[in-house]
Length: 337
Image 1 (cartoon, one colour):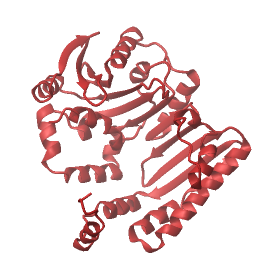
Image 2 (cartoon, helix red, strand yellow):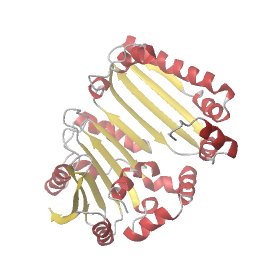
Image 3 (tube, helix red, strand yellow):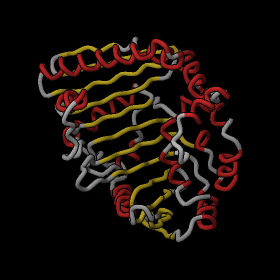
């Protein structure tokens, strides 16, 4: 087991679930007060949905790797996770994020597997929680994974995890510390969407200052994107997979421009997919995107039959034919790259 295996598993949990009710209040109480972007999922209803069953079947084809992990830790992400909440302060100058997971964790077995397979892991108790920590050699930062009882896991750098544990210990039943307007958006979206994302920060603040294309479509599009003041979206799983999104622009003119860019992008991709079987299936789905404006807001929605999504994923994940592999080899550089 490599050093990042446990962390990658927790970071990938968002693939497997939607939310059937409002975001977990205890998880929300541990989010940092300066959070600007939040995303959530809940695995409960996805596991019994047709799409959830399809994804579970696909994961089962990955081989013995996942089974070895499950055997070593007693933790099966497809079975044991009920909700995931991720938060970010969206500040490039001092980036900070937090991942919180509610589920069923065999903490003793996870700790035993971590200490047996991961070098330099430290195990301690902090504010009533079990905390595992270790240095990430790539970033030279101390990362931590904490367990509150056997039902909540928290991952981030150690200082952020300890701060979340402090908020949990001090604020049982207290109101959420984040911006009230952002919390209201989270409550609204998480109550009706299966997977959701809410941001109260402008896109301009997320773009590094040195990113400034001098020509081409990017040079024309980036200024429009930078006028997005906030954005949100969600996905709902049923017989139709329903996706919705909204971007709040600085003014009506920029909202109209963004809507035009989105419509042009769909048209462009559709034209590209004319002679490609895989792209053709995708473009047929993209043509169902509905882009509208309401004042300075741009709304995007898309409803896709779940069976069509399965068919598209089966096509994309299908092993390449011998002819396709031969074409790939013929396009490789002489050094094999």
